[in-house]
Image (cartoon, rainbow, N blue to C red):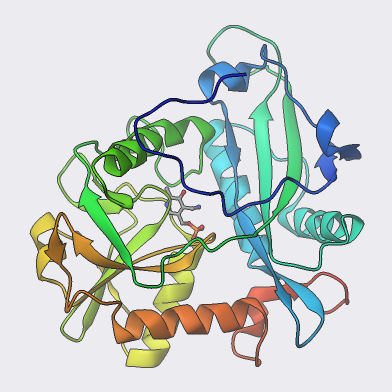
Length: 328
Ligand code: PMP
């Protein structure tokens, strides 16, 4: 077996080996048997859609909580609809199946889940229709930290986020990650932690796997959903939390690249890392070069909500081991 040999050294993975049980098309399969063939259509063409969901263990409550699982599965349905596919289980059924997967694997620690709905038929032609699909959900333990608490250094990538007219932006599509993957490696080769991607019109779109928020004075701003971004679930949560803290909903509009150099706080948000402070863009300091106070508060808030510390936004999480009314 060969691994990629790009110049930058790969960082230590934040994930351990997958948990032994995997859900595949209604059956419980051993992780070693949950394989697709090299002949699968999705392997060549990236024809499929996926999600990333977090589960957070609460030592206080001795309970594992899924974060916004049904919202993620609604997005999986929307992504599939964009591809002309229909996911065979409802979002609510998928959330219940995910809880069962975690119980079967006896997960009592932070975990990351990967639902995948891909064309596994062994058809050579490039198309979406008439090719057998497979729906799977796998889980990994989260063993490391995904964020450097001192904040990260980003570069504005020369590689643009694919426009919606080429690859539908708001759908989370397997093949859509090739541009971000190259951008990430190019950024790492140049000594940066992350790449910020502009859209083809020159507006800031997002980072490789997270959405962007900036603060200029009293105003929080995030690229509008028409700027070729993925409509992030964490983005929605950050909008709500910022509105609650500041009394004003963040503005959704185009962000020009020079605004990144002038802003007071800059953060990335996504399921895996929750909130990532950006302290430098292309060698220029953001604010005073340290994570902003509001950014740190947001991270603390989301970490607490994810493990149900207190009742704030308890509706965003659902317990795995005890039954309760499902998340809204
Ligand atoms: N943008 C992209 C391209 C992503 O892959 C992700 C991660 N799913 C996000 C934004 C953040 O989305 P979410 O908060 O739903 O994880």
